[in-house]
Image: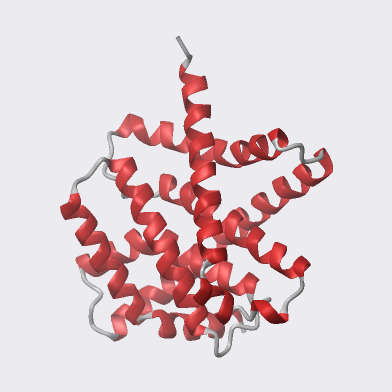
Length: 229
């Protein structure tokens, strides 16, 4: 019989594979490619963009598992935390099986760690910006705070990934951001539902939450630009 550690590794491997699939779907999307001006970019830049999508998909799983509002038994939170920590290693294992040299594996490990630290720091800024926007819209009640907490991993990843893909030149590129946000939100819903084992009714609530954050995309981007200035 496989051990618990073996089962956890197998789960992390499958999740890393799902992240790669999510990244490839966004990367292959015709609308995404058109808005990212792929025909004006060289192969090296295409690779860089895919790598940003992939590391963002991996980190979205990790941030989802670390969310304190997950409706799971208390002892399951610790398992999810350990599983999140194994996600980067699972990606490295997959690359090693493909014959990727250690030098490039080390670069991937550094990139994941760097982006994780960056997005953890930006999470507080994005949460504060979202709360300020909701307060201006007079929607900052208990439900509003719940929606912010619920969708925070998606917003952190989508904003960070968009910034890096555009090399921080995000002005006038809201449509590209929306394509990424929708794709990451769909992936987030899938991972969160699998984690909580919930029914379609919860999917509907998550869907409504996703629709709500689309309304504040432009305001959030403007707010984040002001904060980083």
